[in-house]
Amino acid sequence: MVDDDPSLARALKRGLEAERFAVDVALTGPDGLWRAAEHRYDAIVLDVMLPGLSGYTVCSRLREAGNWAPILMLTAKDGELDEAEALDTGADDFLTKPFSYVVLVARLRALMRRGARERPVVLTAGDLRLDPASHQAWRGETPIELTPRQFALLECLMRRPGQVISKREILGQVWDFAFDGDPNIVEVYVRQLRRRVDEPFGRGALQTVRLVGYRVDPAGG
Image (cartoon, rainbow, N blue to C red):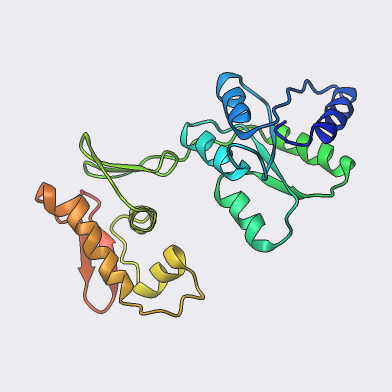
């Protein structure tokens, strides 16, 4: 359990131990990250507001390191955006404070029955590889530096190799369905991607299908 409220942490520890859980407590983000990296836990209860590192950052770093222990995020905030951020950074479930202790225990048991998620597969197109878990991309053995948006666009295309994806669908997946800017932003990012993943290697994996959309050559170009 990672929570910076000592009294709450002690109370939850006592309660969970009475339910026959073995509980370790960390009061800061860095300590929680270290403990989770050094020990194998069946589940992690992780507060969002932590000193040193936020719960979002701790969760994201654990996932990037390949740690897929179930994470239940606790937050004093309330709102769909905070819930979405918890899930987007890799949490499996969330509870908003104040919460029911009975519900906390029930959700913990459900997460533990489900077990750790499998690490997402590495996407490939020829020698072009993309690892959603570690947020890394390579051509052969050469790492490719991508911005978060460039990475999201490449992932969108590589999840459906050979299939043409429309500009509208890309905007919905990589930006959002409420995007009301210039749709030509997709073309701008496709050009940026080509300069990173294709042109330096003499390839042409990212293809434009005129008046339809874009695709990735399954053979990597």
